[in-house]
Length: 72
Image 1 (cartoon, rainbow, N blue to C red):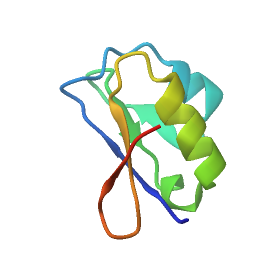
Image 2: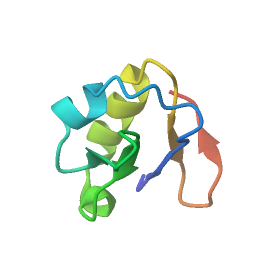
Image 3: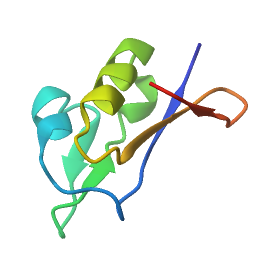
Image 4: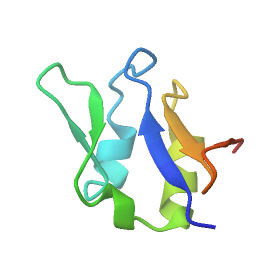
């Protein structure tokens, strides 16, 4: 399906689950909020879905190829 990821830093609570589980896709910035890595665009849809589902604050958002939000 080729989904894209976005992180809403206003919702991020810095739990670190995404960084621990998917370090090729997520990292922390200087404020310890999650950011996407340069490799995030090549992350599989399966990993994107897993990360969004497991984000305790719901800060990780998924979008389809047309830019529409995808519920997980």
